Length: 269
Image (cartoon, rainbow, N blue to C red; front, side, top):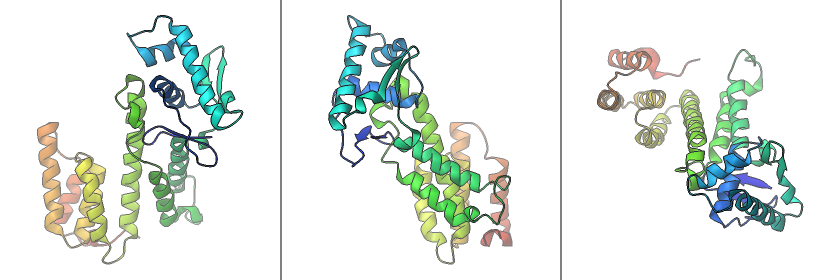
């Protein structure tokens, strides 16, 4: 059985059929268990996450009812799947391997890409250090996303920390892939990459690393005025929203563009 949380919560059988989990509190229970990634969750934590201050008449019994409903929904879809929701001294746990969740697969793919990029763990002779391989892994990881993480529960208190963490990991993967693609792009390809990055910059206007890749793509596409304009836009936003200036690295990039430094027009060797 597979569980998807990089978007609205979806459960699928191994054949890909969607498993109905219609009752809101049962779906919330499943979301909380998935958030804990194989770790046990005490009953009192589950009760607090599911009901907060609006407790049912008998919280413990009501929780057991929701657990039973979840087990029945999984069992109906795949015989034996009720055992995935286990109970022990430490509480309830969803016993599924990391690769059974899209969040787990995302983590594995990005970790592979980042490890391959680290010269301390992989020499340059290792084929996995090929930038194209890293772009492939990151593209596969990002393709798993169908929308905001835990989209059904992103406003729930129990999901906020995980949603923030996952969204940050997604943005980092997008930024690193953009940098790799920037270095791989051939003549005439920087313009289309800049256009793609423009949408990401519009969504995340204060991300300096993303803005840097965007500026470089614009510059290499021969759109120097736009590259300088987007730096000016970031500087104004940072001053207005946070009362700070762009970081040293981005400021240096801006200065190099003003000087039309020769090394900005080509990718590093």
